[in-house]
Length: 258
Image 1 (cartoon, rainbow, N blue to C red):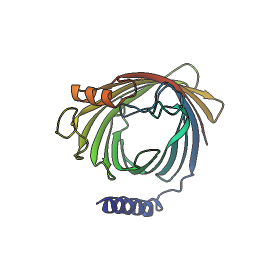
Image 2: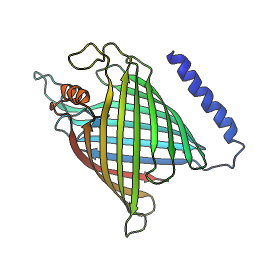
Image 3: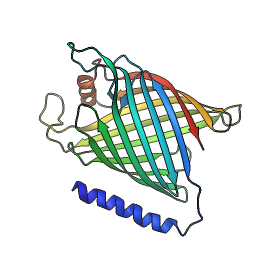
Image 4: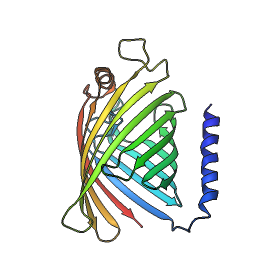
């Protein structure tokens, strides 16, 4: 099944690439960023404990195709073993491949993510995303885990940027909600034999986009993550370092694009 899904994705990309050659030639793009945050929160889960995380990212794109390499460095990684000291650790590297096109105000993208993780099995996902270039920019993305823990993760996001006085400076507000539908027998509701299927996490964020010169942008961000159901609250709390299920966190990201 996994090989079939990957083959379908590659076929879509090859077909789209062939079609793109008939369009006007575009220039390749590239960007790099470095972020420092008070917590690593992913889909509502707390993946760090009382430590700053450093998250570099590198993205290249051409004619609708995008490749991104992203990593996470925990500056004081807690391995939950009191017998060993906490230390700095690079514990995740993600590779994302995507092809996206616009059809009028609509945007459609298809992609693949490989999560290289330290200490646990690596993970793979396929995803399909569709959005509209209208007020609030609503975007619906459906992720399918195709590796060891099959499940669907569906995320609906909205956002809006408010231009501020300085040219290129803006206040960026965003919100998202999600639903998790697990097919994995090992991934069950807390204190139950039922598979974990419920509204999962919500996220609110506010950030400032501050251009510095022509190519550099500084982006301080504050975010709040919270469960969307009692089942999610119990599950997230049981898996988090702190025992909490909602998290206020923030940091700053510096990006260079050309």
